[in-house]
Image (cartoon, rainbow, N blue to C red):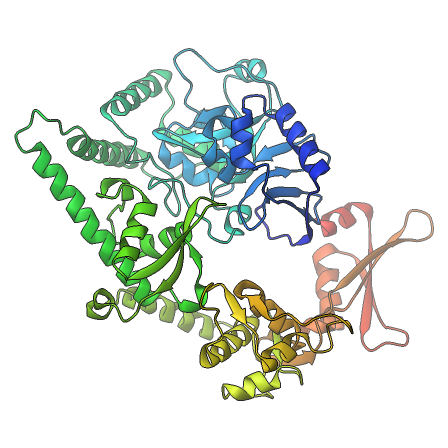
Length: 584
């Protein structure tokens, strides 16, 4: 559902009546949830937005927050919660549990859930009907990783011998809906980049025993890891899975043994308290080091204010040493909010608590603080840089097929801003480069509002650049603008251009890029003709493209000039079966 990028056609707020209607629909679709659950997901006093996509999908969420539900057909009959909603209310849907965390690689890679990948509980397969929404979980991790619809009923599944597709996945962790959110996060340390494992903070010896019991059940049922993987991938895997299976079991067992040593330290041990205190102190030191590393290397003042969850997931966690798990619960602070507030009390950072979202927001960084100035960040990018340079060398040796880039030229409205910071007023800039220039201007003129770092106070020059000629006569000009709106507003006041590169040929043209037009017409009888035009925008030759398609689809093609326009079009005459293939 969200494997490919699809732009939203519109984004609007729901009225009070629409919010009540949505709430009634959700209660009908999710009877397991209580009123308190819905209050946590869609607060009554919050502004609820709906994003309408070109594929008819509707996405509901809290304004400036996270998407919570999506409607596949836009009619309210096919509603699903997002993973963000399931992380708040894990039991919103019934869930299937995977046989092991390694199977999650295929789910978050975009594959559907197969029955061999499901761990059947001792009491048997739960009852369900076809088309019901179900979630997917990993053993030892309470947070679901995906949501989808059952493809058959439980009765049909038992008749099929628990083979085939169990769940058609509609949304999963790491798809484009999850990635589209500003400040996206993961619920616990078990969620890694390409796999989801058990949550280390929730694993206990009881979980270990249950895992061993599941493993024995798997052996008795005759289903091994190779079968589970092949069922999820869809083809035979030519690997030595006996070694891989032993490595996986050994790895999981070792990790759980390590966790039991730490978590099961009791007061009976003479050094139990000392071990716990040392562990907490070590985590505190590591937290402090990762925070300072992030403030030096990745956190820019232009990114502020920043939600605490974004700081943690996108900046602090990536700065931890390789192979080390960083868990805030193992520290002396226990919670992210208390840790950030302690850093604020020391003067290193400035934070405030967003009572609406119940989250701490990073407002500013004191880069003159002793802890900041005395810290020397580690340069751990050499390995990545070597890989990047090797990749760049490989790309330079192979011809580039096609690159299309939106660029912008300073207009008369914004030329004074560019001149003020010493930028070329006749150059071409990407949207990010233009945004950086306007932020350089506000830093130079010190225009950030002292009482609210998220706002910029407009002077006459910047106000004219953003609004002169765009405000109706008699209306008042704004005196301030939010940082998140500054970049897009500034870019919209520039002249749009586009650059197309194919191989060694590069063309820069004014305006937005025109799309290729493909139209199918029905002519005499059942004959169909496909007309294609606009391809010359992408530096494609009409004759060569028509010749290539003629060979590919075994059809006839005709090239003609467009009447009254520059350029050409070509017509493709296909038989019905070839036409279907062409459209695919």
